[in-house]
Amino acid sequence: MLNWITRGVRLSRQQRWFTTEVSKGFVGAVGNTPLILLKTLSERTGCTILGKAEFQNPGGSVKDRAALGIIRDAEENGRLKPGGTVIEGTAGNTGIGLAHICRAKGYKCVIYMPDTQSQEKIDLLKMLGADVRPVPAVAYENPRNYNHQARDYAETVPNSVWTDQFDNTANAYAHYTSTGPEIWEQTNGNLDGFICSTGTGGTLAGVGRYLREKSNGKVQVWLADPPGSVLYSYLTSGGKLFERTGSSITEGIGQGRITNNLGTEVKYLSGGLHIADEKSIAMLYDILDTEGLYLGASSALNVVAAVELAQKLGKGSTVVTVLCDGAYRYQSRLFSKKWLQSKGLLEAIPGHLIKYAVL
Ligand code: PMP
Image 1 (cartoon, rainbow, N blue to C red):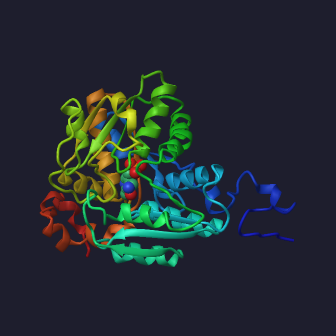
Image 2: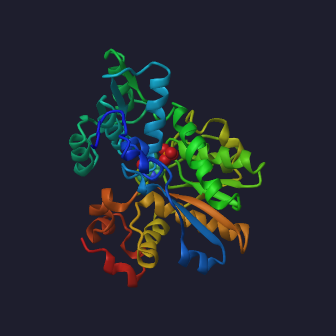
Image 3: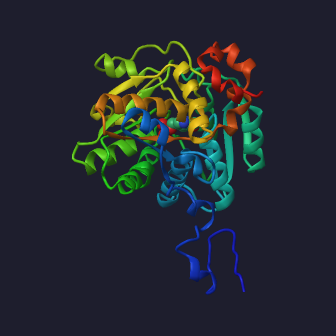
């Protein structure tokens, strides 16, 4: 007899036969993503370009790991008890990861988000059972910013946690204990560089620190930065934080400050690469054409950066990057000629790839 229990999995004798193959629920399915050899780019460069397929997490993005790490930490510290409420300010993937995990574990979930976000994301969060609260999109310095509103609201709700993805280091720790070791094992330690962009900085700092320590500093860890982010200029100016100027089409990345998750790891970075939107969007279409991978813009930016880093490190080098999520959540923009035109990016797509812009 099957013995399905939705919250907390108890397995029947029959099910025990396949426990090594079967993940226990949503939470058990987070992580252990494939590492994909990007064949065409590797052939073109004479290097080995590898992408960690984070879009294969059950909530569809790299942020499932951070969401799970933060919730586990709150449970272990006794800050979150059964029936409690998880509260976050987020524009996207972290909220979706949290909402999935809250459903799976029986917590309530409240998401404050800027009212500029796509209807697809709002609908998905609602379908997952989250209480979605769109608020005016104002700067971080403004006390009405969505992050501050989430923090303030959490103070009024008993048995609740504000998950604070930017400065709660359980986020980077989740990557230090899962994504980093997975990459090391999947490459057998044979890699020369790791590069990715940052939102909270959890992925870059957590994976970077693990690979740096495990390789005794032999693996170079690099930052990839979009327009409108200050981290590239922070690295190249020897630590000056300039005002944010410009903007990018890449959602979920770019940062105006050194978050707690980036923390001291910034000083161990070997360097940074600034990647223009024209290059990211061209790669997004190129990689769909050559590899059949349907990636979001931050993944495409990461791949451009991985190619440029491999070329810097020399022929035969191996570079790993992160494929953060798929294009599904952004397709009405990224595959719309009208939208691309409005951003001045239609010409950036090579002629033979325009056929993919079908909207
Ligand atoms: N890409 C996407 C699509 C994201 O949503 C995020 C997180 N906001 C990132 C990259 C960056 O990840 P991290 O927060 O770990 O820096």
